[in-house]
Length: 282
Ligand code: IPD
Ligand code: CA
Ligand code: CA
Ligand code: CA
Image 1 (spheres, rainbow, N blue to C red):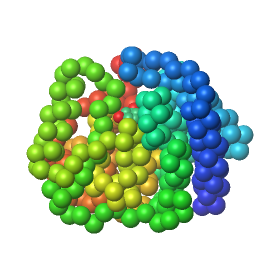
Image 2 (image 1 turned 120 degrees about the vertical axis):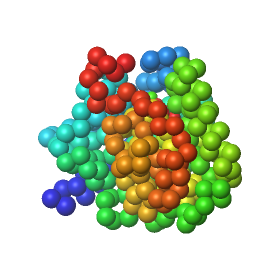
Image 3 (image 1 turned 90 degrees about the vertical axis):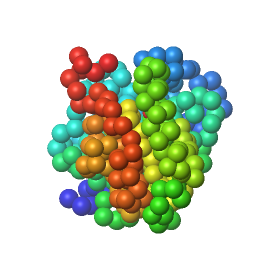
């Protein structure tokens, strides 16, 4: 069994690198931008092309495996995580960055079996940084081991978060109110790379102490979750329990005390779950 997952991970690295080439090429060319749920929820032909490439290549090699992919879900595929080996794919994490040429864009491939993440591959393709982790085997960036920061005090930390693409004024108020609480602890700084996965890889690399966001999806954080844990970090839900892949909320931190401080500080407003029935999930 073990070797099968290693073969899958090697395949994920190969296909993520190919996908990254497509993303870099598209930056030089016309990228065909479209909107999804609103004028700030962008998607491009490249997002769709990369997802198709990953799914087709995996189907050929592992015909019995399942998929959850951002653009397939957008096209009406269900977002269901069952016990089967499942590839959780975000073809372009940081589409807004990609559209604007802001250089943090990642191809994300997570892999779960029995609902447990077995490996994660995040290719920050403009930086050419390949982040990888396999459960129990450590986390790496371009082959070099990753280790989270050893900082214990939140007031000596940088915390990453994002604004997402929900522009409902009530939600925006909650985002700012939560950010204000963190900023006033006080922390050294708040940052946001514009890519959930890259923020999490920066936690794994020790460059920021924690990342939190409400409203993201399983494809945004599945791959990077393994990388954070294998670099020695912790993942919590906003209620303080273990990370829930379908909950659309995550806290990723260098250690439990900083993660729990974030839980204590922030309002844990819920987002519609990724596995909610389609008629309740806009
Ligand atoms: C988005 C990015 C962004 C985060 C959003 C995500 P996308 O992913 O990760 O940083 O704030 O919540 O949806 O749409 O660029 O793949
Ligand atoms: Ca998107
Ligand atoms: Ca994403
Ligand atoms: Ca995406």
